[in-house]
Image 1 (cartoon, rainbow, N blue to C red):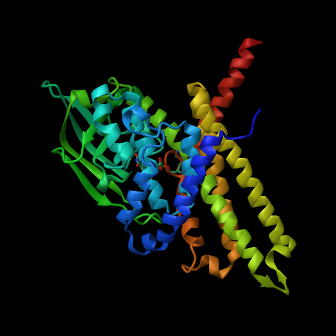
Image 2 (cartoon, rainbow, N blue to C red; image 1 turned 30 degrees about the horizontal axis):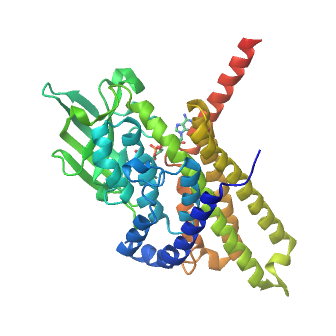
Image 3 (cartoon, rainbow, N blue to C red; image 1 turned 180 degrees about the vertical axis):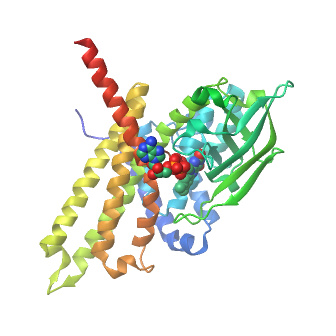
Length: 391
Ligand SMILES: Cc1cc2nc3c(=O)[nH]c(=O)nc-3n(C[C@H](O)[C@H](O)[C@H](O)COP(=O)(O)OP(=O)(O)OC[C@H]3O[C@@H](n4cnc5c(N)ncnc54)[C@H](O)[C@@H]3O)c2cc1C
Protein backbone atom coordinates (compact mmCIF):
# COMPACT_ATOMS: atom_id res chain seq x y z
CA UNK A 1 0.00 0.00 0.00
CA UNK A 2 1.31 3.41 -1.00
CA UNK A 3 0.22 6.42 1.08
CA UNK A 4 1.80 8.98 -1.27
CA UNK A 5 -0.64 11.07 -3.30
CA UNK A 6 0.16 11.42 -7.01
CA UNK A 7 2.54 14.43 -7.37
CA UNK A 8 0.34 16.17 -9.98
CA UNK A 9 -2.62 16.04 -7.57
CA UNK A 10 -0.48 17.39 -4.74
CA UNK A 11 0.58 20.29 -6.97
CA UNK A 12 -3.04 20.97 -7.91
CA UNK A 13 -4.10 20.84 -4.25
CA UNK A 14 -1.37 23.34 -3.35
CA UNK A 15 -2.65 25.70 -6.06
CA UNK A 16 -6.19 25.47 -4.68
CA UNK A 17 -4.84 25.98 -1.13
CA UNK A 18 -3.12 29.22 -2.19
CA UNK A 19 -6.23 30.40 -4.04
CA UNK A 20 -8.44 29.74 -1.00
CA UNK A 21 -5.99 31.45 1.38
CA UNK A 22 -5.29 34.48 -0.82
CA UNK A 23 -8.61 35.07 -2.58
CA UNK A 24 -11.48 33.43 -0.68
CA UNK A 25 -10.68 33.55 3.04
CA UNK A 26 -10.22 37.36 2.98
CA UNK A 27 -13.86 37.55 1.77
CA UNK A 28 -15.32 35.21 4.41
CA UNK A 29 -16.38 37.92 6.86
CA UNK A 30 -17.96 40.04 4.12
CA UNK A 31 -19.95 37.08 2.78
CA UNK A 32 -21.23 36.37 6.28
CA UNK A 33 -22.08 40.02 6.93
CA UNK A 34 -23.77 40.77 3.61
CA UNK A 35 -25.08 37.37 2.52
CA UNK A 36 -23.55 38.06 -0.92
CA UNK A 37 -20.75 36.23 -2.70
CA UNK A 38 -18.74 38.87 -4.60
CA UNK A 39 -18.42 38.40 -8.35
CA UNK A 40 -14.61 38.38 -8.07
CA UNK A 41 -14.85 35.24 -5.91
CA UNK A 42 -17.08 33.59 -8.53
CA UNK A 43 -14.55 34.57 -11.21
CA UNK A 44 -11.76 33.03 -9.15
CA UNK A 45 -13.71 29.79 -8.64
CA UNK A 46 -14.33 29.64 -12.40
CA UNK A 47 -10.68 30.39 -13.22
CA UNK A 48 -9.57 27.54 -10.94
CA UNK A 49 -12.00 25.13 -12.61
CA UNK A 50 -13.77 24.43 -9.31
CA UNK A 51 -17.22 24.13 -10.89
CA UNK A 52 -16.05 21.14 -12.94
CA UNK A 53 -13.29 19.31 -11.08
CA UNK A 54 -14.80 15.89 -11.75
CA UNK A 55 -16.34 16.62 -15.14
CA UNK A 56 -14.60 15.02 -18.12
CA UNK A 57 -12.29 17.26 -20.16
CA UNK A 58 -14.39 16.49 -23.28
CA UNK A 59 -17.18 18.46 -21.62
CA UNK A 60 -15.02 21.32 -20.40
CA UNK A 61 -14.15 20.03 -16.92
CA UNK A 62 -10.76 19.45 -15.31
CA UNK A 63 -11.23 15.70 -15.78
CA UNK A 64 -9.80 14.88 -12.37
CA UNK A 65 -10.28 11.57 -10.61
CA UNK A 66 -12.64 11.60 -7.61
CA UNK A 67 -9.53 11.70 -5.43
CA UNK A 68 -8.33 14.85 -7.23
CA UNK A 69 -11.76 16.40 -6.95
CA UNK A 70 -11.88 15.64 -3.21
CA UNK A 71 -8.43 17.16 -2.67
CA UNK A 72 -9.75 20.39 -4.19
CA UNK A 73 -12.88 20.28 -2.02
CA UNK A 74 -10.75 19.68 1.07
CA UNK A 75 -9.10 23.06 0.41
CA UNK A 76 -12.31 24.83 -0.56
CA UNK A 77 -13.75 23.76 2.81
CA UNK A 78 -11.29 26.10 4.52
CA UNK A 79 -13.28 29.14 3.36
CA UNK A 80 -16.92 30.22 3.85
CA UNK A 81 -19.34 27.39 3.06
CA UNK A 82 -21.18 29.53 0.48
CA UNK A 83 -18.25 29.08 -1.93
CA UNK A 84 -18.63 25.32 -1.67
CA UNK A 85 -22.41 25.39 -1.98
CA UNK A 86 -22.09 27.40 -5.18
CA UNK A 87 -19.24 25.60 -6.91
CA UNK A 88 -18.62 22.22 -5.23
CA UNK A 89 -22.27 21.18 -5.14
CA UNK A 90 -22.36 21.89 -8.90
CA UNK A 91 -19.63 19.27 -9.31
CA UNK A 92 -21.56 16.42 -7.76
CA UNK A 93 -25.34 16.56 -7.42
CA UNK A 94 -25.46 19.46 -9.93
CA UNK A 95 -23.63 17.85 -12.86
CA UNK A 96 -23.72 14.14 -12.05
CA UNK A 97 -27.33 13.42 -13.16
CA UNK A 98 -26.49 14.71 -16.65
CA UNK A 99 -23.08 13.03 -16.75
CA UNK A 100 -24.49 9.68 -15.68
CA UNK A 101 -27.81 9.58 -17.49
CA UNK A 102 -28.12 12.46 -19.96
CA UNK A 103 -28.26 11.94 -23.73
CA UNK A 104 -25.20 13.07 -25.67
CA UNK A 105 -27.15 16.17 -26.77
CA UNK A 106 -27.93 17.10 -23.15
CA UNK A 107 -24.33 16.52 -22.11
CA UNK A 108 -23.03 18.76 -24.90
CA UNK A 109 -25.63 21.41 -24.16
CA UNK A 110 -25.17 21.57 -20.37
CA UNK A 111 -21.94 20.10 -19.06
CA UNK A 112 -19.58 22.75 -20.51
CA UNK A 113 -21.94 25.41 -19.11
CA UNK A 114 -21.84 23.82 -15.65
CA UNK A 115 -18.13 22.97 -15.60
CA UNK A 116 -17.24 26.55 -16.48
CA UNK A 117 -19.55 27.97 -13.80
CA UNK A 118 -21.51 29.99 -16.36
CA UNK A 119 -24.60 28.06 -15.27
CA UNK A 120 -25.34 26.54 -11.88
CA UNK A 121 -27.40 23.37 -11.53
CA UNK A 122 -29.71 22.26 -8.73
CA UNK A 123 -30.85 18.81 -7.64
CA UNK A 124 -34.47 18.59 -6.51
CA UNK A 125 -35.35 15.42 -4.65
CA UNK A 126 -36.52 16.42 -1.14
CA UNK A 127 -40.14 17.36 -0.45
CA UNK A 128 -41.83 18.56 2.73
CA UNK A 129 -43.22 15.06 3.26
CA UNK A 130 -40.23 13.04 1.99
CA UNK A 131 -36.60 13.61 2.96
CA UNK A 132 -34.83 10.53 4.33
CA UNK A 133 -37.55 8.37 2.81
CA UNK A 134 -36.94 9.78 -0.65
CA UNK A 135 -38.83 6.98 -2.38
CA UNK A 136 -42.01 8.45 -0.86
CA UNK A 137 -41.94 11.63 -2.99
CA UNK A 138 -45.32 12.70 -4.30
CA UNK A 139 -44.32 15.07 -7.11
CA UNK A 140 -45.85 13.39 -10.14
CA UNK A 141 -44.90 13.07 -13.78
CA UNK A 142 -47.40 12.00 -16.42
CA UNK A 143 -47.03 11.53 -20.15
CA UNK A 144 -49.26 13.99 -21.98
CA UNK A 145 -49.40 12.07 -25.29
CA UNK A 146 -47.52 14.79 -27.24
CA UNK A 147 -43.96 13.75 -26.42
CA UNK A 148 -43.90 15.62 -23.11
CA UNK A 149 -44.13 14.88 -19.41
CA UNK A 150 -46.13 17.13 -17.10
CA UNK A 151 -44.68 17.63 -13.60
CA UNK A 152 -46.82 18.59 -10.60
CA UNK A 153 -45.74 19.04 -6.99
CA UNK A 154 -43.31 20.90 -4.75
CA UNK A 155 -39.74 20.45 -3.55
CA UNK A 156 -37.97 22.04 -0.62
CA UNK A 157 -34.49 22.99 0.69
CA UNK A 158 -33.15 22.96 -2.87
CA UNK A 159 -29.60 24.31 -2.80
CA UNK A 160 -28.89 27.08 -5.32
CA UNK A 161 -32.49 27.01 -6.63
CA UNK A 162 -32.79 30.83 -6.91
CA UNK A 163 -29.61 31.08 -9.02
CA UNK A 164 -29.81 27.79 -10.92
CA UNK A 165 -30.09 27.74 -14.70
CA UNK A 166 -31.09 24.11 -14.80
CA UNK A 167 -32.68 21.59 -12.41
CA UNK A 168 -32.73 17.83 -12.09
CA UNK A 169 -36.20 17.10 -10.78
CA UNK A 170 -37.27 13.73 -9.44
CA UNK A 171 -40.93 12.77 -9.84
CA UNK A 172 -43.00 9.63 -9.69
CA UNK A 173 -44.95 8.12 -12.56
CA UNK A 174 -46.62 5.71 -10.16
CA UNK A 175 -46.45 6.26 -6.39
CA UNK A 176 -47.56 2.64 -5.84
CA UNK A 177 -44.24 1.47 -7.33
CA UNK A 178 -42.15 3.36 -4.72
CA UNK A 179 -38.50 3.80 -5.77
CA UNK A 180 -39.16 1.95 -9.06
CA UNK A 181 -41.79 4.51 -10.07
CA UNK A 182 -39.40 7.48 -9.95
CA UNK A 183 -37.90 9.19 -13.00
CA UNK A 184 -35.52 12.15 -13.34
CA UNK A 185 -36.07 15.15 -15.62
CA UNK A 186 -33.81 17.99 -16.64
CA UNK A 187 -35.75 21.26 -16.53
CA UNK A 188 -34.40 24.60 -17.63
CA UNK A 189 -35.02 27.66 -15.43
CA UNK A 190 -37.77 29.78 -16.93
CA UNK A 191 -39.75 26.77 -18.17
CA UNK A 192 -43.46 27.64 -17.74
CA UNK A 193 -44.85 25.97 -14.64
CA UNK A 194 -41.51 25.97 -12.77
CA UNK A 195 -41.32 28.57 -10.03
CA UNK A 196 -39.02 29.30 -7.09
CA UNK A 197 -41.00 29.41 -3.87
CA UNK A 198 -39.96 30.53 -0.40
CA UNK A 199 -36.26 30.88 0.35
CA UNK A 200 -35.65 28.87 3.52
CA UNK A 201 -33.42 30.64 6.05
CA UNK A 202 -30.87 28.19 7.42
CA UNK A 203 -28.72 28.25 10.58
CA UNK A 204 -25.66 28.98 8.46
CA UNK A 205 -24.42 29.39 4.91
CA UNK A 206 -25.37 32.97 4.17
CA UNK A 207 -24.54 33.75 0.54
CA UNK A 208 -25.96 30.47 -0.75
CA UNK A 209 -29.71 30.01 -0.92
CA UNK A 210 -31.92 26.97 -0.38
CA UNK A 211 -35.48 27.29 -1.61
CA UNK A 212 -38.76 25.65 -2.41
CA UNK A 213 -39.49 24.74 -6.00
CA UNK A 214 -43.07 24.73 -7.23
CA UNK A 215 -44.12 22.65 -10.21
CA UNK A 216 -47.50 23.60 -11.57
CA UNK A 217 -48.28 21.71 -14.78
CA UNK A 218 -44.64 22.06 -15.82
CA UNK A 219 -44.26 20.61 -19.29
CA UNK A 220 -40.93 18.90 -20.06
CA UNK A 221 -39.92 17.38 -23.43
CA UNK A 222 -39.44 13.59 -23.28
CA UNK A 223 -35.84 13.97 -24.49
CA UNK A 224 -35.09 15.76 -21.20
CA UNK A 225 -35.72 12.60 -19.22
CA UNK A 226 -32.46 11.45 -17.61
CA UNK A 227 -32.27 7.70 -18.13
CA UNK A 228 -35.30 5.51 -18.59
CA UNK A 229 -38.63 5.65 -16.77
CA UNK A 230 -38.29 4.19 -13.29
CA UNK A 231 -34.50 4.62 -13.04
CA UNK A 232 -34.58 8.04 -11.33
CA UNK A 233 -34.19 6.77 -7.79
CA UNK A 234 -31.10 4.70 -8.62
CA UNK A 235 -29.69 7.73 -10.44
CA UNK A 236 -30.30 9.95 -7.41
CA UNK A 237 -28.49 7.47 -5.17
CA UNK A 238 -25.50 7.29 -7.53
CA UNK A 239 -25.28 11.10 -7.59
CA UNK A 240 -25.53 11.15 -3.79
CA UNK A 241 -22.59 8.72 -3.59
CA UNK A 242 -20.55 11.41 -5.34
CA UNK A 243 -22.03 14.07 -3.05
CA UNK A 244 -21.27 12.11 0.12
CA UNK A 245 -17.73 11.36 -1.02
CA UNK A 246 -17.16 15.08 -1.54
CA UNK A 247 -18.80 15.95 1.81
CA UNK A 248 -16.42 13.52 3.55
CA UNK A 249 -13.51 15.48 2.08
CA UNK A 250 -15.21 18.77 2.95
CA UNK A 251 -15.35 17.74 6.64
CA UNK A 252 -11.63 16.97 6.62
CA UNK A 253 -10.74 20.38 5.17
CA UNK A 254 -13.00 22.32 7.53
CA UNK A 255 -11.66 20.37 10.53
CA UNK A 256 -8.06 20.96 9.46
CA UNK A 257 -8.72 24.70 9.35
CA UNK A 258 -10.22 24.55 12.85
CA UNK A 259 -7.33 22.49 14.17
CA UNK A 260 -4.80 24.98 12.76
CA UNK A 261 -6.69 27.83 14.43
CA UNK A 262 -6.86 25.88 17.72
CA UNK A 263 -3.10 25.22 17.73
CA UNK A 264 -2.42 28.89 16.96
CA UNK A 265 -4.67 30.01 19.80
CA UNK A 266 -3.32 27.47 22.28
CA UNK A 267 0.20 28.68 21.46
CA UNK A 268 -0.61 32.37 21.91
CA UNK A 269 -2.98 32.42 24.87
CA UNK A 270 -1.69 32.18 28.44
CA UNK A 271 -3.59 31.17 31.58
CA UNK A 272 -2.12 30.51 35.02
CA UNK A 273 1.31 31.67 33.80
CA UNK A 274 1.56 29.12 30.97
CA UNK A 275 0.53 28.86 27.35
CA UNK A 276 -2.72 26.97 26.89
CA UNK A 277 -0.91 24.28 24.91
CA UNK A 278 1.22 23.49 27.96
CA UNK A 279 -1.81 22.49 30.05
CA UNK A 280 -2.40 18.77 29.75
CA UNK A 281 -6.18 19.21 29.40
CA UNK A 282 -5.63 21.25 26.24
CA UNK A 283 -2.81 19.06 24.96
CA UNK A 284 -5.11 16.06 25.03
CA UNK A 285 -7.85 17.95 23.25
CA UNK A 286 -5.42 18.91 20.47
CA UNK A 287 -4.13 15.35 20.21
CA UNK A 288 -7.66 13.91 19.98
CA UNK A 289 -8.58 16.46 17.31
CA UNK A 290 -5.46 15.73 15.25
CA UNK A 291 -6.00 11.96 15.50
CA UNK A 292 -9.65 12.29 14.47
CA UNK A 293 -8.83 14.51 11.48
CA UNK A 294 -6.12 12.10 10.36
CA UNK A 295 -8.43 9.07 10.60
CA UNK A 296 -11.25 10.83 8.74
CA UNK A 297 -8.82 11.95 6.02
CA UNK A 298 -7.72 8.36 5.39
CA UNK A 299 -11.36 7.26 5.18
CA UNK A 300 -12.21 10.16 2.84
CA UNK A 301 -9.33 9.36 0.49
CA UNK A 302 -10.26 5.68 0.54
CA UNK A 303 -13.88 6.55 -0.36
CA UNK A 304 -12.62 8.68 -3.25
CA UNK A 305 -10.37 5.85 -4.41
CA UNK A 306 -13.27 3.37 -4.22
CA UNK A 307 -15.45 5.77 -6.22
CA UNK A 308 -12.75 5.72 -8.91
CA UNK A 309 -11.92 2.02 -8.77
CA UNK A 310 -14.59 0.05 -6.87
CA UNK A 311 -17.92 -1.50 -7.80
CA UNK A 312 -21.27 0.16 -6.94
CA UNK A 313 -21.69 -1.57 -3.55
CA UNK A 314 -18.21 -0.62 -2.37
CA UNK A 315 -18.65 2.94 -3.64
CA UNK A 316 -21.93 3.43 -1.78
CA UNK A 317 -20.74 2.00 1.52
CA UNK A 318 -17.41 3.85 1.41
CA UNK A 319 -19.17 7.15 0.62
CA UNK A 320 -21.66 6.65 3.48
CA UNK A 321 -18.87 5.70 5.89
CA UNK A 322 -16.81 8.74 4.95
CA UNK A 323 -19.72 11.16 5.32
CA UNK A 324 -20.79 9.57 8.62
CA UNK A 325 -17.30 9.69 10.12
CA UNK A 326 -16.51 13.12 8.67
CA UNK A 327 -19.73 14.74 9.89
CA UNK A 328 -19.26 13.45 13.43
CA UNK A 329 -15.54 14.27 13.46
CA UNK A 330 -15.91 17.87 12.23
CA UNK A 331 -18.73 18.49 14.70
CA UNK A 332 -16.50 17.39 17.59
CA UNK A 333 -13.47 19.28 16.28
CA UNK A 334 -15.54 22.46 15.84
CA UNK A 335 -16.89 22.18 19.36
CA UNK A 336 -13.43 21.53 20.85
CA UNK A 337 -11.94 24.47 18.92
CA UNK A 338 -14.70 26.74 20.17
CA UNK A 339 -13.96 25.51 23.70
CA UNK A 340 -10.24 26.24 23.34
CA UNK A 341 -11.05 29.77 22.18
CA UNK A 342 -13.44 30.29 25.13
CA UNK A 343 -15.62 33.42 24.93
CA UNK A 344 -13.77 34.62 21.83
CA UNK A 345 -14.73 31.39 20.07
CA UNK A 346 -18.41 31.90 20.81
CA UNK A 347 -18.31 35.55 19.74
CA UNK A 348 -18.99 36.78 16.24
CA UNK A 349 -15.56 38.50 16.29
CA UNK A 350 -13.92 35.30 15.05
CA UNK A 351 -14.90 32.73 12.39
CA UNK A 352 -15.07 29.78 14.85
CA UNK A 353 -18.76 30.03 15.71
CA UNK A 354 -19.58 30.41 12.00
CA UNK A 355 -17.66 27.25 11.06
CA UNK A 356 -19.26 25.47 14.05
CA UNK A 357 -22.72 26.34 12.64
CA UNK A 358 -21.75 25.65 9.03
CA UNK A 359 -20.37 22.17 9.60
CA UNK A 360 -23.39 20.97 11.61
CA UNK A 361 -25.39 20.52 8.43
CA UNK A 362 -23.27 17.64 7.17
CA UNK A 363 -25.12 15.35 9.60
CA UNK A 364 -28.34 16.21 7.75
CA UNK A 365 -28.02 16.96 4.04
CA UNK A 366 -27.33 14.52 1.20
CA UNK A 367 -28.68 11.84 3.56
CA UNK A 368 -28.56 12.19 7.35
CA UNK A 369 -26.07 10.38 9.58
CA UNK A 370 -28.84 7.94 10.54
CA UNK A 371 -29.32 7.09 6.84
CA UNK A 372 -25.53 6.64 6.46
CA UNK A 373 -25.63 4.16 9.38
CA UNK A 374 -28.53 2.38 7.70
CA UNK A 375 -26.53 1.97 4.47
CA UNK A 376 -23.50 0.67 6.32
CA UNK A 377 -25.50 -1.69 8.55
CA UNK A 378 -27.49 -3.13 5.65
CA UNK A 379 -24.34 -3.76 3.64
CA UNK A 380 -22.76 -5.34 6.69
CA UNK A 381 -25.59 -7.83 7.23
CA UNK A 382 -25.82 -8.62 3.51
CA UNK A 383 -22.13 -9.46 3.64
CA UNK A 384 -22.66 -11.65 6.71
CA UNK A 385 -25.59 -13.44 5.03
CA UNK A 386 -23.45 -14.10 1.94
CA UNK A 387 -20.66 -15.51 4.12
CA UNK A 388 -23.07 -17.76 5.99
CA UNK A 389 -24.68 -18.95 2.78
CA UNK A 390 -21.26 -19.93 1.42
CA UNK A 391 -20.51 -22.13 4.45
C1 LIG B 1 -28.76 23.20 3.94
C2 LIG B 1 -29.53 22.10 3.27
C3 LIG B 1 -29.41 21.92 1.89
C4 LIG B 1 -30.14 20.93 1.24
N1 LIG B 1 -30.04 20.80 -0.12
C5 LIG B 1 -30.83 19.92 -0.77
C6 LIG B 1 -30.82 19.85 -2.21
O1 LIG B 1 -30.09 20.57 -2.89
N2 LIG B 1 -31.65 18.96 -2.80
C7 LIG B 1 -32.47 18.13 -2.11
O2 LIG B 1 -33.17 17.36 -2.73
N3 LIG B 1 -32.49 18.17 -0.75
C8 LIG B 1 -31.70 19.04 -0.07
N4 LIG B 1 -31.73 19.10 1.31
C9 LIG B 1 -32.60 18.21 2.04
C10 LIG B 1 -31.86 17.12 2.81
O3 LIG B 1 -31.31 16.18 1.93
C11 LIG B 1 -32.86 16.52 3.82
O4 LIG B 1 -33.08 17.52 4.81
C12 LIG B 1 -32.35 15.24 4.44
O5 LIG B 1 -32.34 14.20 3.50
C13 LIG B 1 -33.20 14.80 5.66
O6 LIG B 1 -34.55 14.78 5.33
P1 LIG B 1 -35.62 15.55 6.26
O7 LIG B 1 -35.09 16.90 6.54
O8 LIG B 1 -36.95 15.44 5.62
O9 LIG B 1 -35.61 14.75 7.62
P2 LIG B 1 -36.54 13.49 7.97
O10 LIG B 1 -36.48 12.50 6.88
O11 LIG B 1 -37.87 13.97 8.41
O12 LIG B 1 -35.78 12.91 9.23
C14 LIG B 1 -35.81 13.58 10.48
C15 LIG B 1 -34.80 12.91 11.41
O13 LIG B 1 -35.19 11.55 11.63
C16 LIG B 1 -34.13 10.69 11.27
N5 LIG B 1 -34.70 9.49 10.67
C17 LIG B 1 -35.55 9.41 9.62
N6 LIG B 1 -35.84 8.12 9.34
C18 LIG B 1 -35.14 7.36 10.22
C19 LIG B 1 -34.97 5.96 10.44
N7 LIG B 1 -35.56 5.06 9.65
N8 LIG B 1 -34.16 5.56 11.44
C20 LIG B 1 -33.53 6.44 12.24
N9 LIG B 1 -33.63 7.79 12.07
C21 LIG B 1 -34.41 8.24 11.09
C22 LIG B 1 -33.31 11.47 10.27
O14 LIG B 1 -31.98 11.00 10.24
C23 LIG B 1 -33.40 12.87 10.82
O15 LIG B 1 -32.45 13.04 11.84
C24 LIG B 1 -30.98 20.07 1.99
C25 LIG B 1 -31.08 20.24 3.37
C26 LIG B 1 -30.38 21.23 4.01
C27 LIG B 1 -30.53 21.40 5.51
